[in-house]
Image (cartoon, rainbow, N blue to C red; front, side):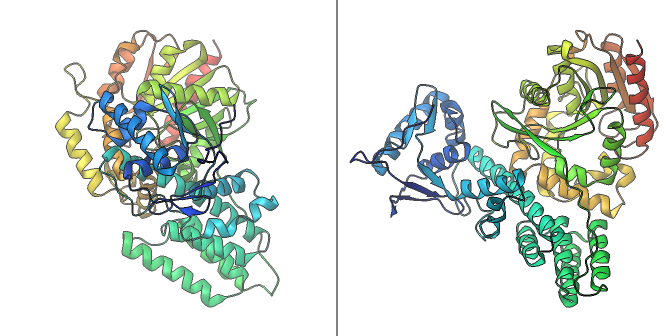
Length: 550
């Protein structure tokens, strides 16, 4: 049902503009309207970003996190009346449960997002091709830059939303740069690549696209300058050399420069096969590989605390795992809400939210039953889902999976509160570096390229300010009571010397899940794609064959 336009005092529809890339500013019918209520500005940005009804309790929690729910809702009610009164129009509408914008609000950040989505949906359309200037504008990556509010909850939302916005913009710029290079428009490609690098100076795709564009332009000096600027930045920032992707792009650029004028080398782009599903609380990103008619059906993979499906696709080890599984399954790798490319503004990431996310993706895929492969906290979500919807699960595979996020007398393998606090402090002090890789994947700890990729994955998966909420949600995970109720075929796989999830957890799960099979393997890597991945995949495939043959 369409929302009414906000009315001016004369009754004519008002044109309301919101600039939210920097400190928020409002214009009504072209006239600047100062709004000194900082929480009023924050409320308008929140509703403008979401473009849907938002529960009053959620808004109160974000704007006044230290107040009781009743006090927060009362303050929100007063604030919405004050904003409408100061603006002189009925911009905010609501009922007893929710608030929303009564239409007619034009936001610069929303325009950038719409342009980016246009590029991703139909990159060759004239409308998409006309968006380059807007996406490359200096202010395009911004969201509330220079705006502060005395609410940790709101500031964490702003940081997460800004990362989400920038990631969408980076994906669109990557698409534009690659397409422009492929179609012989190097100047356009260089503009998109340069904008991408401004947003994330460590983006391999941006540097690779810029090298290709400079080479197509025949500018050898610019190719050398771009490569050595990248190398110097990586050395100064991370103490590493350029990645294999950048080195390959540099070598390709050198070969391009050696060709006669007008000649171009063939290009091949490996675009991540990413899709999106809608849930009640926003959009969920997932990577899909293989055929829907695969002989073994659909396998949904749930990773641990952090994931980012696009960055995952860039890792050769992860691609190799997914491509092998795709020989038998339609493989789906999911970013749960609040993580990676999925919706960042969402309720707490508890188990029920994980179940809702998983079922929303299953519904989007159009399949009735799925196989589940859960790693770490992803294993707990898989267990919860299999307990709630056993008829929708063909089989459950748990790799280095946890059943409980907090220490208990009968579960001594999880962190105590003081240990979790120490880990949080360590993560926050070094976020964006290759934090904890030596524990998650000891075999990769000295691999420079792996450290570079891991650091980038962490930066893109979550913001530093979101870490407390992520670890709190993990601490609340507890599926111990679900184990005895499971009635689906289950395999528990564990590396015996895993430093993150101890082998005792695998024994615990296998004993308590009726009919579960236990497979202990040598090795100490927690990450599925590190170490002897072949042995893990062999175990998974043997299990599937046994179940299918029954």
